[in-house]
Length: 305
Length: 60
Image (tube, rainbow over all chains, first blue to last red; front, side, top):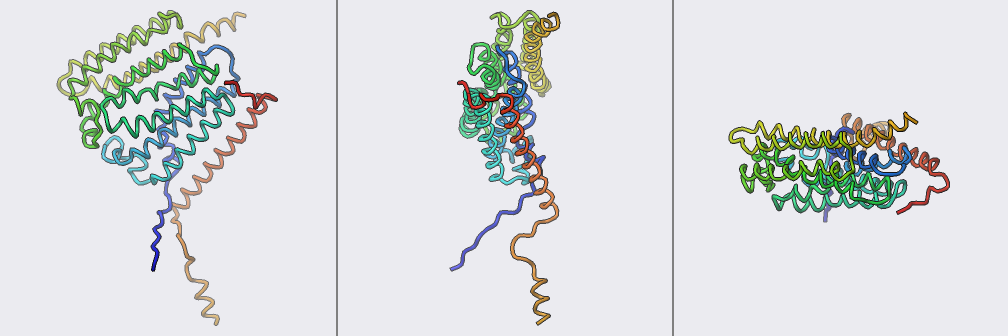
């Protein structure tokens, strides 16, 4: 009897490939929204502990990205936008990505729990689990509502930031959660409008593939009509000042105008491409203004004293 | 006898022989892991100093 043992080819993965596995661009948005949640929270958090929380949230987001790329390697390879990712391109073996993702997830949650607090750690663990198991493994391949429900994972970081600072959760970070939650569908559907052939080839039931371009454009407008007043909600509920109110109303109006242009678009995808790009700017401006709005009185008070 | 010893010495070692690219990538990965672990150790050290005796008090 002879036993044949197949050996895995030694890895050629560079450090940069592992960084790419962590989806650094998504990570930067996660860290930024978590930072806003952390800084607008009441009370005082030592800068070292705050930095620790942000690093853990960033690593946790990287873990979720890695596990997503591990599971989705088959469909990534069939889509032009994702074919060059480290696993489909053959630079990282699936098992390496899985081990990397699980290690990062474990370390980020445990360190956040040990050095910051357990509520923040539990929220981070839930976010990673939701993104990987509920969104990636289940919803993404089974329903056009994938990014609607799955968007909850991307919306949680401000709540983790708030929990890191206070040890609990409140209405205010929940509002930020809702803003990101309702921002996600118009953002991703705008992308999927001009990438629908890619999604169709990969067998991913994105809305334009299942319901058509016209229906997707209609739903982009509907979600944007909910998003715009929601974006201004921190102001009219008294959580933010006039500066935030003016910016949120103006940016929301801008988003609605863009969504109307997408709705009216019949040939080409110029409007949807613009909406995709500007929706990122919208979220950034909204959160940055909230930060300035909340930090300005504290800073001016500090200098005046 | 001398010839046999020389042949034995020249025989390639069993196992996988890494290419230059694989060796370079492995070295870079090892350094990255070492740096990450170093950062983790320093982080725990600094947080211990910041939190002082209350380092194990983790409020819910």
